[in-house]
Amino acid sequence: MEYIARVNLKTDCHNRKELIDFCLQNKEQYLAIGWSYVYSPDENKILSYQDYYYAVKRAVKIRNKRINPVHNIFWNAKEDDLFWTRDLEGNYWICRATGCALPYFDKDMDIGAVVPIEAYKVGMEVPGQIKASFNRPRGGTAEKIRDDGIVEYSKYVFNLKSGKSQYDYVTTKSDFLSNLPDFELEELVISYLQIKENYYLLSNSIANKSTTVKIECELISRDISDPRKAVVQVKGGHSKEVDALDYMDYVSHNYLVYLFAPTIINIDKAKNVIEITKDDLNSFYKEYKSILPESIVRWENLFV
Image (cartoon, rainbow, N blue to C red; front, side, top):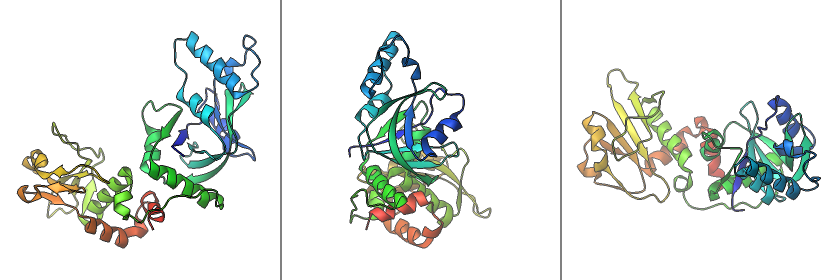
């Protein structure tokens, strides 16, 4: 499986709840897309997804537009492919395709095609890469997530929620932190600073930036007897080394700088730049695991 796709259930219908209930709350479940207007007397009879696809392609060409990526994702969909979707309450659903895409005409809900699925509600806690895909500005109807960790995680979650052993998923004996996805690693480091170092995260969560270095967020001390402000940079996996001296602009503005990365150079030459080590995070994780977000903790199941 090369990728997992996320699909927004959002056609040009007047009642989106009706659409989502139709797709997820009935005995027969679907992922659905729109463009139902192509079912018109001017088109040849649409008997297959291919007929529907080419009808949409002709229609968008007339409007000087390109076919939406979701049509290609549906074109390639086959049994056992995995998808993520989301309902109006913000719950994420893991979906397994039970067949290929089919034409399906419903004018009121603006449905033009469906992929038959079995779907299970996962809840609101999912990895950050999945959340980001849904929340990305102008992210479109669908997007492919090409990340091996997300693919294996999705297989694991489907098995868990369905109660089946539908997929073999790859576990790794590498350490937990080295394989934690970027979003979850950043959240773990920020949680560490808030709980162990007694900071709170500023509501805008974005610190002032220098001309060369991107930091994750800005934090302020909770201790009124020891006022501090800090920024943090997180680099996971096999990222390139981080040079502590690149952050001296923040230090000159009275920030403490916290760094987590596989390799940090010149840390001994950079005053008020503090390294967070793997041992720090591993100890923190073991001690506070019970109160950490499930989006972080559940990754442990893949690293045994």
